[in-house]
Image 1 (cartoon, rainbow, N blue to C red):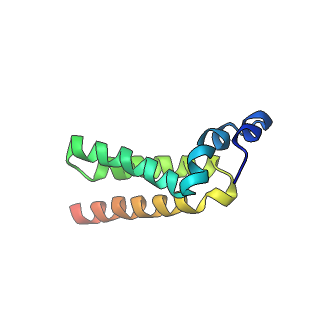
Image 2: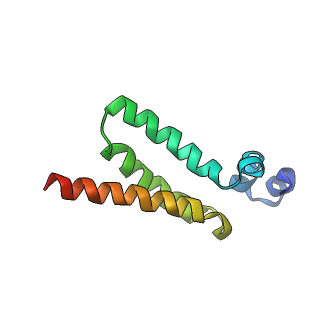
Length: 93
């Protein structure tokens, strides 16, 4: 378990803020956070393309900003969303 206050005081703002939840459920917190956002957008638009493209953008941002040890789950999210976008492009042709 990481010390959340120590992370905040040393300058790891993103890791320190999410430390409370990542201590409990691990790296799956990031997957859950993005999944909730994508489901809400899917319910509003009734289309898979918008949430998948948002998942690709946010997956790239997460992989780029999170520490390398925490990049595995966002990389899986990025892969799944990118596959959905590619599938929808080929399906429309």
